[in-house]
Length: 187
Length: 215
Ligand SMILES: [Zn+2]
Image (cartoon, rainbow over all chains, first blue to last red; front, side, top):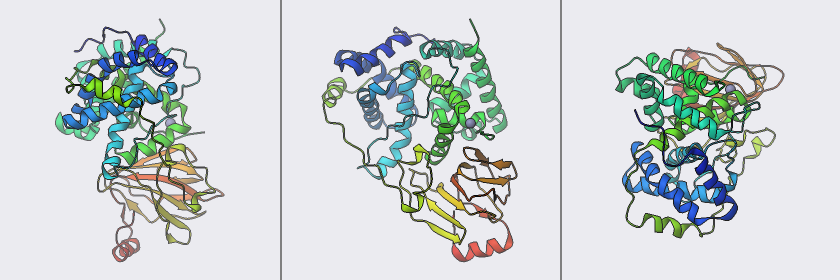
């Protein structure tokens, strides 16, 4: 089981993106690149892309961070969560652009408005998600990892783990209930 | 008031990007109207973020940072949004649909039409808008794989009950159905199916054989 801590805290990276938005701070961007660049490359590689494409998409994702930094709202999402959503959308969008290279990468936005009554700051929420993930039983953690990291539909995960589809689905449901309970738990 | 939501595992697949692009689009349209599901998805995106942070770093190519920094000052290209065809002008379309190219409308009866929506796709996936006027019923059919539906306007009734504006429906090969339009107006839906529908009623099967695969 991985350790859910890095050298920077979640808040640091949010501040970093805010600095990029406000001051076009290249040094902060270089620091962000040093952290997220190699991880994004790993993320795209695990989705089955070649090293070259993985590196291209990594650059595109971070270029989007540079350009759209003013749309980042630290109340709405933590930095890694925001960057994860950008990377996910780029990998889905890739097929469209492969077919028609003139098309630009779409910047999807707006689907994740904060919910009324959501009191937790997202940095704090992200911290709780990490703690909750670390506490997840191994079988649930495995399906979560496969579906997030390797972009596999549940039907395919079921095949690979030789489990009935219903079992995979119920593990995802259980993981979700557990995560939600841990994240919403009052301190 | 939204009554029908995507199942929790569909929201998890959406957040992880595990659905095909057409299905992603249909779920995104639902999310635009549904705060409950948005909060569910944002939790799963938080999980994605945590996993991204924990990914083992991969070594980047020589001078990757230099190449990256050199791109920062390039002017941001403007993306040209396709314009929507005239027959959609009177509808209040969901925002995620607006960046998409919608193809020509094909009427199958005077009261029912289909129009393809261009999404990057795996071969058999069909993503389209379907409009059915008041008091119409679609031919009995079933699906191979899953079919996601988002109600843009109007309402229809199906085996799962009544579906109104903003509702989400998911059917699969276990369901043979004949959805019908209820209410005072026609019904416009965005649909994405893993594969073309299969008509099951005898007259419809004959028509399908004559006209080739529709949607
Ligand atoms: Zn919903």
